[in-house]
Image (cartoon, rainbow over all chains, first blue to last red; front, side):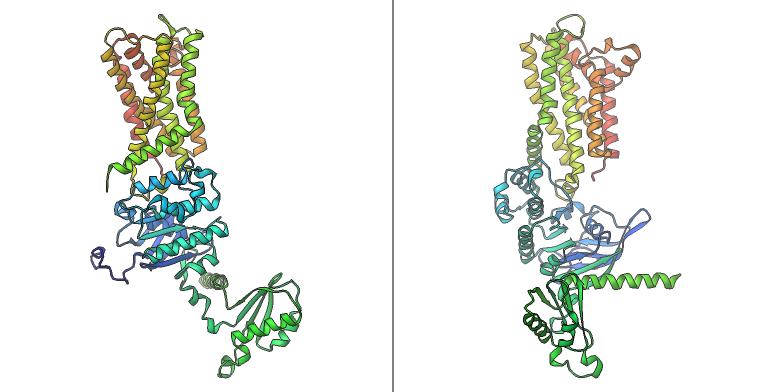
Length: 345
Length: 248
């Protein structure tokens, strides 16, 4: 970013220049603060997922980037431009997917794609897009008669038709079936690979884990965590957790005694178990991790115990999922704000 | 960026959707044709001297303009707002002026189609337009139609811009019924009770039908009062809708 706030000359943007940028963004609805000093940036060829519970401020943040909302404070830039003041320039370079609707209910996919293609100078071929989002079989079916997944794929195709440099997608996989999710993920990756900056909000932690280069977790309007999915989940070498699904009511005491001390075994919810090495020898003795506590050894001990008892298990996972990490982050944030509230009183 | 290509595509899409909506066709073509045939042949309403059809062709043309510019445009726009279509278009390069321009152009297209159907039906029922100054009459009729389209369009978009889609649907239909009865379209304004006739003459529906009756029926000059009323509504309703319209 140049000091005068202008975008760098076309084609000479350094890779490090953020395509999308929020600095201390504040959004208020009346007296309620929906977004409270949120800052982040995303660059070319990057997928940034904004995660957070309902009401965390995800949509408000994205809508500032789309120019729908004027920030109460802070600076928002898309390709170096102000989405409200420079709306005319910004809209030709962004592709938007709203959380709900956004397409004429009467219009079938082919007509909708041709219409939206006419808005842009150098659009994608609607026929090519129809195949990419696998909507050719329903190319002549009005939007209102498409399934939820088909509607989502059409919305995404409409966001892509102008070959945007920035994709702003608000919950692109909400209500989409697994096959549709796969198609949506492939399209988002393809857009990223040709250099687009993709910013998407989601509740689907699995989607974020598979898709995101970087994750931003919002809670009550503030950023509570930011980083790559791997960094939030913890390094794989340091993963000392094993989770698996099995029939409910296993004799966990037996498993504990087999694996040894320093390990907790819990049935988190009926049929879902977690084994955690909580006390590490290095933390106690300063020595290296004992061999029987490495992630591989922990997993091997668990699986052999299950095999000996002929327990049918599934979904064995070594290390934490993004969902685990996400819930931990939110939990510790809640505790921190509670403490904060108490200390203020 | 080509200025015209998005506009032409938008007009194409709007026209496609308008002509594919069954309820819209019923409102814009079915009801006007049915009314024209029914009232011209059944003599349920006394329309004064001359054959009934010479009252009903201008009256029903006025109804057709109101149906398209106010009811059809307003209801469709209300639902587009409700479905987030207008919001989504706000983040494309189409822009509001071109969207509005495309919508108005589509309304004029549909009105031409309506006239192309209603006028031959009128001739078939024995209608003879104007006496004498046919050219001046046609020009007056066209000018009145354009002013009325702006006035009704403004009313339709005002309702669509401030009401929820379902409420807007009910309001537009209710207003249609009131203006149909008070608008000199099926019942001559002169036949209304005195006070009501006074109110009716201030409304755009009666002003339009009065202008069309003069231009296409009697061949006489359009009363100044009708021009003033139409002009005032055209300015007032478009300013009001511009000031109050919400895109989300």
